[in-house]
Image (cartoon, one colour):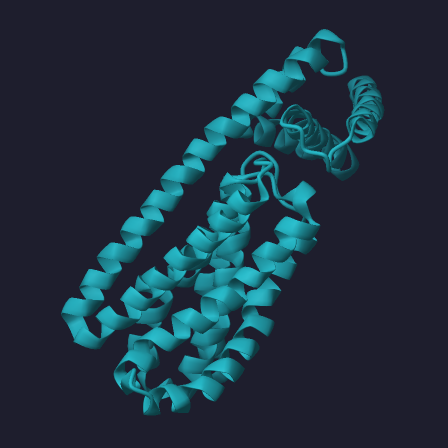
Length: 327
């Protein structure tokens, strides 16, 4: 079997799924380096630690009263889901200013899951290369979103309590999300033991869960748009932003249209400034919302700094427009 074909079978669907998740975060996209960190954790450290623990626990559990059958479908979820969730807990604790809510939890959790499934599929495809065609359709296509779905449950739980001041509630939400991830993972493993009927039942359950996650993501869009519309009205009234800026920032389609128009007509430098304006204005709206919710990690200094950066960018954009208008 061609090595390139095996690698492509594992990486191409993952790349498509990851791009979709990147698109899903429509208003304030997460920093690229954090996206890479989340994906990397799932693809290498999480896989390595999971294999280490599973190999160490498999024989003792198989010889225990639990028996080999239960160990076969129950061990992986109990080991893999907490290890994958470690990245989300780390982001939540140490990069909280980039963890704005439920949608960010879905994004980070999905990327950890995609990294994990890509490497897991790669190992399966190399080991069972004679059955690559069937494995590709089952693991990369029909169940290609499984690990992303499982880990996104933990991310959603953390995002739901992002602004709640009670510590035990945040811990409880994380535990609930992790428990749900383990349960859905275990149900999938158990169902696949029943061949085709089990595969169909598992597919229905998992894709129903994926659709629920997508519905929550769409509701999060609405919530984030309300943040932008409410918090940036003040910036329009003070003159920091124009009414045109305001309309563009609150609409992903108008943002893209303005950015594309600037790129084609004024070049890369002007495009970058317009794109940065949209990003910083959105960040300002989120920052002001977090201040209202008494998030101590965001300060008035950060809000004022964002306003200063936006003011400088608008001045540079106006100079670009004047320059290109004279050309």
